[in-house]
Structure formats: C-alpha cells, structure tokens
Length: 121
Image (tube, rainbow, N blue to C red; front, side, top):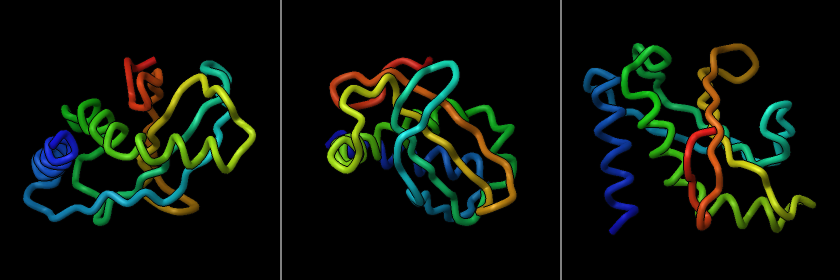
C-alpha cells in the first residue's frame, strides 16, 4: 500500500512539473559514492524520459527526490550491500540526470533509516 502512495506521489509530482507529460523515472545506475561532505554511501542515478520542462527549478523538486528515493531504496540498498564491499553506508543519495555524458543533474543525500530514506543531509 505504501508503494502505491509513493508511486502516486511520483506521478502527481511528475505531472505538475511536466505539464501533462507522461514521464518515466528510470533507475539507470546504482553503486557506491565517496562524497567529500557525507562520507561513503549509496547513490541511485535516475533519468526521466522525457525530461520534464522546468524540472531543475521546480518548487516540488525536494518532494520528488524524496519520493524517488523511498521508491527505489528498499531494493537498491540490499543490492548494493550484497554487490560491493560497503558494509555500513553513511548515506543514500538520489541523482536525477538529464543526459548521459553531458547534461544537468541534481543530487540530494539522505540519512538511511530502516532501509529507507530519512532526513535530508
């Protein structure tokens, strides 16, 4: 039931940012991120298709990042822990990217709480 609410939140936020565009939020990569301020954690790279107009300046960007984080974290955290040498990540991060090699991105890091995304760092 919580997953349905998270997906609904993502769709509502995407629709408000995308002016009725049908946006798919694709998890394109995940792994370990060494961050100079937050330490060693898990990063999830997510790419919207198509890129919503005004995404990077939108009022709901913080809510969208948290919703995406909580949607993917329950499956990504155990996967990364199993596939890498990281045992106790300091954070989990969401990076929304607008292109492959060149483009814009936004990154938000969160504390990990009960296998999900906690407070923004």
